[in-house]
Image (cartoon, rainbow, N blue to C red; front, side, top):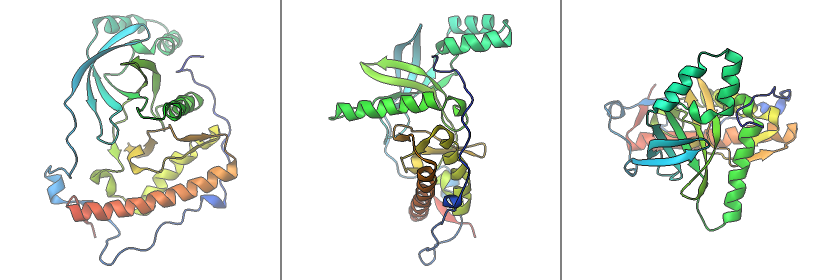
Length: 279
């Protein structure tokens, strides 16, 4: 079956009392309820972060197409994730123009069958992590592939679009949509009230539940706010075949933990100088 085909999702579990999120109420003396970016941050002074390696040209085969791109590491925490700026391709442009003359239904079929020729200018290459325990790393990579294929209907909406699998420098990798928005672990993402954060996270978690999937990586760096909707990036810790009750309870506990971490992160960014009290 093609990686990019769509199907109708199963019915969603009904909400119940387990979705009542109890947000943290304690704050340290002098800690505000609401933050905004500081004048220093607005002036462009970055918060402390490690410099990333310089971008490099790369070439690799993706199915029937040899891709050339400029690759840049997106985060010092995830060296196996590269942002790719694809170089223009006259052949790809010609194919896109020719396919554009066909009926819409035929266009969709061809695009799904040959995604390599219809990629956006910016994509992400996520390689399998390197480490000592190869078997576990393979399991994580396989779990993420399974999650993308299982949740095709919400690709591009809640989870990134999955274009396909490749091999790069002998490693397994996947080509994904480059989701660009406000990262929740950044100072720009730290200006929400806890109630606003929870209201954005809850539908994000619940969107996975019709597929019997619960998200088991409680990390703010995995959530991006795009046009008022929260999206989730990393699916290698997805848990499958969960019960309604387990998913509801896990969602509640996960959002409560994320809210606690969010509050601590806000205090850190205020101390570091990127945030200030908004009221």
